[in-house]
Image (cartoon, rainbow, N blue to C red):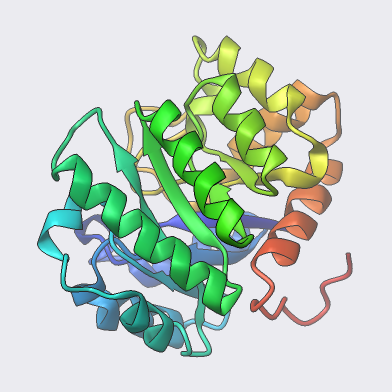
Length: 264
């Protein structure tokens, strides 16, 4: 069984065929999916999708692009909303200096609020980091010093030092379809150095479709392609990487109930 640890099933790209997309994922061996929040103000939509599907779970949080729009969202709000049985993570939150769609101080403030929520709840924080390696590493180190919290560096495309810092602080590293791109040699080298017990796979659908679907709309079923390239990178079988990444997912996303018949 594979897991898509990060997708966006609430996005308009899936509105006309969400059930079919989820069915295709199941047919491809994807037994669980987490649909990730980007705006707390849209949390009701995310939650409804998770409630409607047994093997779909969700998070609650504000993407760094939207940090300036949701400055009123408090740690207490995140903790309260995360009590729902289907909410298994906080985020995604983080720093994005590539697009800079929100003021950087607002992004950092939002990130720290989400970290506090992850620390209080024990739920993993889904971290978005782009072109902000040094600041992200510094914040993670500082905040871990106040008290450990679970986290994953999602859709990893940063440099090796951030991956190493994240792992050292107890975090996980998740790879998306970018790993499959022909020019992603450096990223595959980074993946090869991440401890096997800290690896996850994801789609970030509808974005970043892996080869051979690059340029198309991505969907959770395609996580199998990323897992396949990760297996090749590590010299493992597809079955072994599926077992490893699923076990890792269930360890980190500990609130998730695996489907009936799942055996580690």
